[in-house]
Image (cartoon, rainbow, N blue to C red; front, side, top):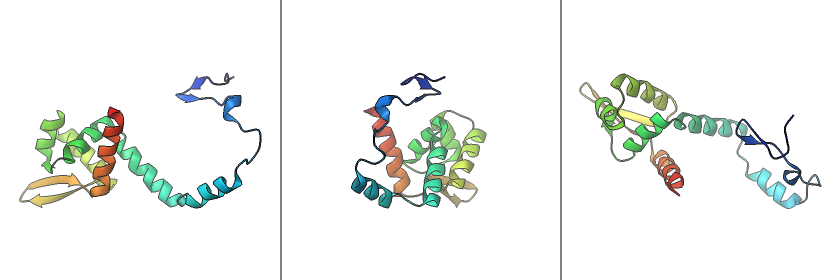
Length: 130
């Protein structure tokens, strides 16, 4: 049995302060918020995007790539993990459309996919510093 206001699995249980007495106090605001909601498939894609980035190792890789493009061995040196581990993380990041690469001979140079990703990484890290 949850106690009002108590935390369960990192989420605070609802207390009487969290519950409105009326079903809809501000119908105009509710309608405006509903109209602004993205469609379900967009929410699913955005959620998957955020889940892929929500890993400390991947975030360190992405932070390094926000400064310059790097090959796997250079990324391994920057984040201090094995090349194999970096390659595994890059596969996930490529599948999530967060990074891309270009080949120069036998070397693949990775970079963030686009400016949106760069902005997301910088904003997340700036927010964490506040």
